[in-house]
Length: 106
Image (cartoon, rainbow, N blue to C red; front, side, top):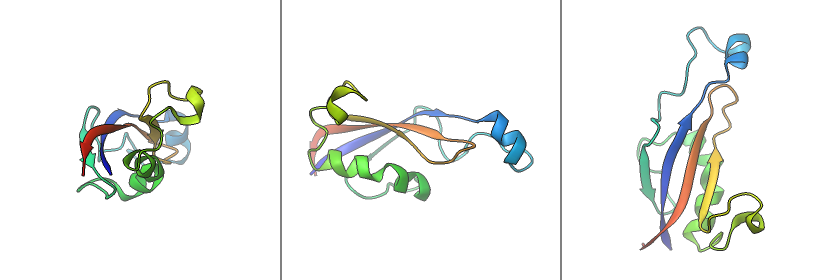
């Protein structure tokens, strides 16, 4: 099984939805910072949001087990082999992650 690197690409705020539906003072997710990195096998890293983990885990599982080493969806999604771009399902303040297989074997 390969180790994967998870990089926080962006933390976002959908202002329209935050204004309509968000709690007072709702802002970008405070659990992650852009550029933050996590390394893991197939288990949730410490201090990683449980919901975000559930949202992106299927890509992590595929990459740790050798899937996606060509390209996901025949290159119509991400052109770099062994890389997935995914986000959590928070509709007001989504976080986008780059998930990539490493050469390190666990």
